[in-house]
Length: 517
Ligand SMILES: NC(=O)C1=CN([C@@H]2O[C@H](COP(=O)(O)OP(=O)(O)OC[C@H]3O[C@@H](n4cnc5c(N)ncnc54)[C@H](O)[C@@H]3O)[C@@H](O)[C@H]2O)[C@H](O)CC1
Ligand SMILES: [K+]
Image (cartoon, rainbow, N blue to C red; front, top):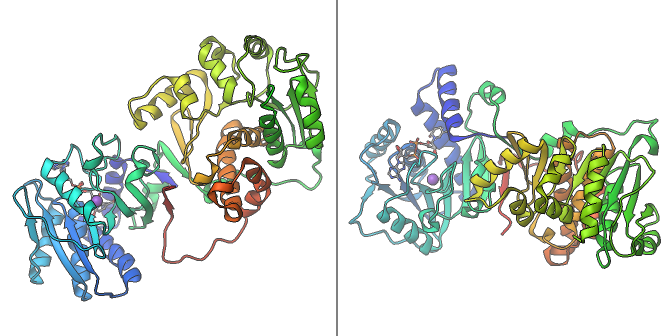
C-alpha cells in the first residue's frame, strides 16, 4: 500500500473532484458518512456521550458533518468549534450552516473559554487539526489537548491525531492529541510508523473515501507499506524439478568465543528461509557445537581458536552473510578488510561487521553493489551519524544508500528498508521480538532469500516481512516475554505458508495496525 505525502493527498482530492464531477463538499460528505458508519457499527445507538471537537479547516468540517449524522440518528452529542483561526474553510462553513439548520448550536471555544466536562466513559472525536497543520498550535489549544487527555475517555482522531505534522516531528509532546484510534483517510500516514511520532496513536485504520483509483495507482510515492499483498507477487515458487543445487548456497561468516549461537541462529534461519545449502565459517571453537547441534550445516573454520583472523575458503557460495557474533579484534578487522578487497559475492552485513565498517569508513567503498546492511538504531547512528529526528534519519539513510549503493534495513518496531530514494515500511512483528538473537535470524533469512535468487532489495523487504510474521505466529504460543529467536526460526515455514492462507473475513474494516504498546 502506498504511503502518500500530504501534498499528494491534496492532489488526489483535486483529481477525484475533477474526474467524478463532484464538489469538495460532496467529497467531505462521503467522508462523514464513512466516519458515521464506522462509529455507528461499533456503538450501535448506545446513549454514550460523544464530544466532537472540531477545528475550522476541513478536518473540522469532517467533524461537523459527522456531528449532523450522529444527531440524525439520535446520538447524545456535544459539538465544540475550536476557534484557533479566523480563516475558516468553505466546506467547514457549509457544514456549520447545515448543523445550525438542524438547530444544533456548537459551543465556540477560544482562549477564554471554560473547557467542557468530559466523563471517563464518554467518547471524544478529535477533528481539530488534520494534515493541514503547518505550525505549532497556540498555547490555549495545547491546554485543550491536555484537557482531552486528562479526561481519559476514548479518543477517536479523524484522519490524523491533531497536532501531528505529516512531514516533521512535533517537538513538544503535549502539542499532540494522543489517540486511541485514528481513522486515516484512504492511506496511512508515514508518521504512524516512526518511533517519535507513532506513539500518538495506539491503533490506526484506513477508511476508503473513494479517491480516484487512477491517481492512486499512477502516482509514485517515497514510501510503501509492506503487507501480504505486496509480498505475494515477490514470492518465487519452487519448481518441480528443482533441487538443492538450484536453491543456492548461503555462507554465514561470524562468531567468536562465547558468541557462537549467533552463527547457529543465522545459519539455521538461512536454511529455513529456503537456501539449498548453508555453510558456517567460524573460529575453531565453533566447530564442535555447530556440528553437534546443527547437522544440516557444513562448517569451515579459521585457523584461530577464538576469533576470525583470515577468511579463507574454497567453496563457491551464492551469497555471504557476515558479522553475526564476529567481535572487533584487530585481527578480525584486518580479515574483514582483506575479505572485502577480494570478495565478488553479494553480501548481507550485520552486527560487528557493521561496527567495523563504521570505524573504518574507507571499507564501505569495498562493498559490492546492492549489499544489504541490517543495522539496529545504534549501529545505524555509527554508520550515518547522529540525526535530529526521525525524518532527518530517513533523509540521511537515503543519502547513505545512494552514496554506497546499498540496501539499508533500519531495524525497529516498524523496520524500514531504504534503497535509493524509496522506503519500505514493514507491518509485521511484535514487541516480543526485542530479544537476543532475532537480528541474527533476520540476517540469515535475507541471506537465504538471496541464495534462492531474490534480488537484494526484494530479499531484504521480504525477509523483514517474513521475519516479523514468523515472530507474530510464534508469539501466539509463547507470549511476548517467553519468545526467543529460536521460536522465530521454527516459525519461518509457517510464515511462508501464511502467505497463501485465506484472510480472516473482516468486511467492516480497511487495512489497520496497532502500535506495539
Ligand atoms: N483526501 C482526504 O484525505 C480528504 C481529507 N479531508 C480532510 O481535510 C483535512 C485537511 O484539511 P485542511 O483544511 O487542509 O487542514 P486542517 O483541517 O488541518 O486545517 C488546518 C487549517 O488551519 C491552518 N493552520 C495550520 N496550522 C495552524 C495552527 N497551528 N494554528 C492555527 N491555524 C493553523 C491551516 O492553514 C488550515 O487552514 C484532512 O486532514 C481531512 O480531515 C477532506 O474532508 C476531504 C478529503
Ligand atoms: K484530527
